[in-house]
Length: 218
Image (cartoon, rainbow, N blue to C red; front, side, top):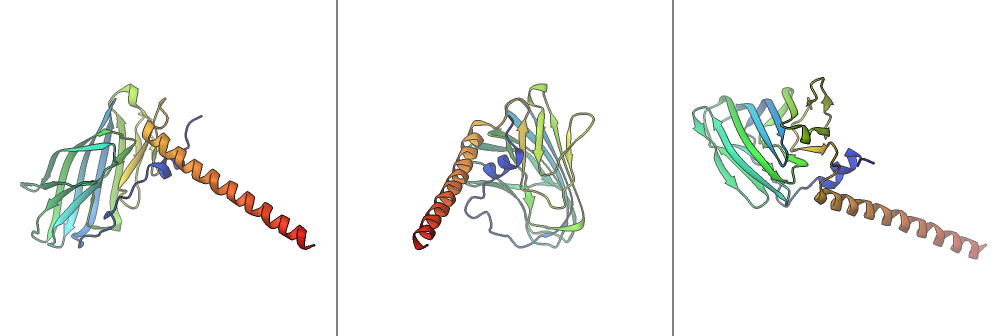
């Protein structure tokens, strides 16, 4: 039986300390195109962004899982390379304060280790209703065809997966064909299920205790 993707999503979501810290807005996100290429033991991501800047520094941040390695190969703005910062639990790409106006960014990075959760670099720029966001997942080899993905991907005739969410997600969750959940996620999923089972057991015991007390009072 295949692991339901929604449970896999709950089990693999990870928000390390400090992730909720918000940098000053650098403008608005007009478009983001994210293409994930899944290989046998790693994934390559090619991403392009179009941001209408307000002059503030632009920061793109990707949060990694403990068993992941993010290798940024290219990250360019118009005529310059973004500053790369490798932190304990995340990777940041920074464009310094600059002129107001539309800025195009292109980047390519590799995710090694546990890539059932692919980090997506998100900018400190607000998404608008008219923003265009597209996500693609394709297979670099037949041994790594994505079986399903979250959030909201639809399979295309060529076998790829495509999504057009209203907001740019901070990660794409994958379930690979024939492999189920990777070992790390199986452990996390087991922990979630164990907690749920414990909660159900506790609730059942509480009901029994209340019934016994009620009978004694009768």
